[in-house]
Image (cartoon, rainbow over all chains, first blue to last red):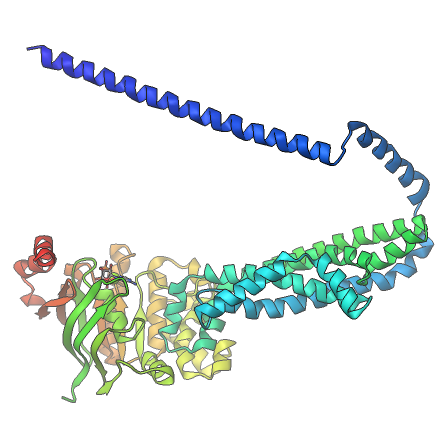
Length: 280
Length: 257
Ligand SMILES: Nc1ncnc2c1ncn2[C@@H]1O[C@H](COP(=O)(O)OP(=O)(O)OP(=O)(O)O)[C@@H](O)[C@H]1O
Ligand SMILES: [Mg+2]
């Protein structure tokens, strides 16, 4: 009478044992995976260590050289040179702003064409996405070098470099934002008999606006940083002036330029943060 | 012939994935009636409504609206047809970030130029009218709130107000009370009924609740697996007929045969 029950219990515990084995072997293979990944990481670290001829001592000597340079050459800043940086600072602002307007305008167009739900044709969407991806794959600095070679030294090259690389970033952001829009809200406005322009203005825009403002202001922040560096390749702005003083060994003048960049970035970030609060 | 307001003939819809959502729907609707469509989930109720205002395109058959064949109208003509048809949705589908009154004003877009509409330059007359409609659905105090700050029942009344602002001849309501509690539900249904009666607007309401359909509609249509299986007065809808409409075994037999 008892037998079937005991058999069942036996089977039960056998099954449990088997499942436990499966659990353990799973765990073991996970552990092996982990060792494998750690091994690869270790190899990569050693490889890059050797490849860059990195020595801990360099870190210390580099650090002390840096300190000597800062205290002997850069400091104190020669504040009488401030007026010579006013022009370049305004130029940096202007490059960033015009570059932003340029990239926002074109990104709106390419973003609308690249988003699946607002494009005029799926093929246009693919072409537009690829174009945006191409622009994004080239950093602003590289555009700067190319454009200085093509149209000469000065802020125009920097402005265009910021504009072009900006389309790569904003175009993708805008297209993604548009694709996340709630189609049901859009369809409801469409059902009232509204035409394409009215649907875009009244149903798409309110959903798109917060992301649009946020990304554009963020790009303005980025532009100020990039515009400061673009001068180094001759594309105008504060970086150009800074590079000028350094190559003339006018380090105390250069340190004023560095402080100016610092102040410029802080001020612009403060303003964009305020605008973001206001508009969104 | 002339008192037939809306007619569908052999209306068929096959979705791209092969789903046969509507099979030969032939129905006529008279001016001013409030008709409720009931039927199990997936029967094709939403597909039917969306085929009328062409949020989806029927595969074959005809839709005749006020003696005009509208099955294949395009462009400007389609917009003019849609302007005459208000639509109310289960999830309200208001523009959440826009104000209540702006959502009502969207009902006027079909009457405006592209540019004025796109930039929301609504005329003084339209704004006053929109505010009056909001008063009519009891929301005058919420005109300048963002739409998503309202409760579900209030949002659905904005949905109704948007439809009224179109001055429509026909209102299509796709499960307007499915997301609402019982008291908001009867409130919303009351508004739909009042408007249908006072303004003489033909109203077609998809419903899941048979009791609500019986209480508010002057006529009930039962749809099952894309076909009309009942069409009559509420008092003709007996327990037995209800069971036939919702009988799942019947559906399975049909599919396997
Ligand atoms: N866009 C679509 N693509 C493919 N099939 C669809 C699509 N929309 C609906 N269907 C299918 O068509 C059939 C009818 O759907 P419909 O939404 O019209 O039903 P319904 O009666 O409104 O159901 P419910 O009461 O659940 O809203 C269903 O089988 C559904 O899965
Ligand atoms: Mg439905």
